[in-house]
Length: 162
Image 1 (cartoon, rainbow, N blue to C red):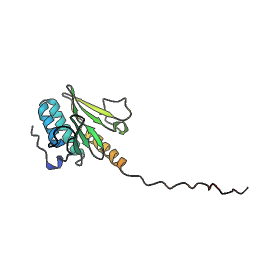
Image 2 (cartoon, one colour; image 1 turned 60 degrees about the vertical axis):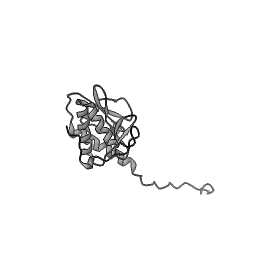
Image 3 (cartoon, rainbow, N blue to C red; image 1 turned 120 degrees about the vertical axis):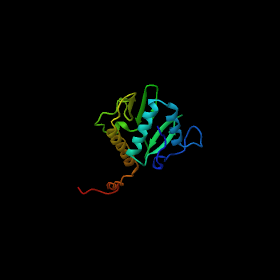
Image 4 (tube, one colour; image 1 turned 135 degrees about the vertical axis):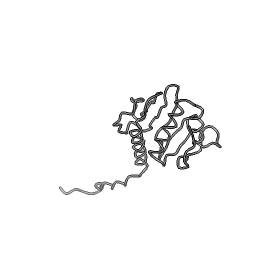
């Protein structure tokens, strides 16, 4: 599997752990290659889908080696474990999930996750829709609302007519 990506998919921030010389994208490439099994292929495919859903996604590398995908805040992570590739959506509880992709971390008030097991087919359209919704939620949260007009309060020294 060729790990080269178009230049439009290489936008990344510097890593906050690991070598300061390696970009987050390079560290994610390295993780995919090191895994060398279904988890690497799955993480690579998920990464492609994330970028297809939002070309403005920024790749980060945080928390001692976790791939992070952000746009005006964290959209999701791309964690790899022995038996799953986990996508944790930072604000997943606030997202509509009509395709019922979320299957993990369902009890929390903020995050939701998708555990992808070996051999499972990814509902690519639904995943891209979920990613776009997560980005829209982040973007909406970054825009400052119009200031509300202050309510007029009665003057402290004024007398009411009786």
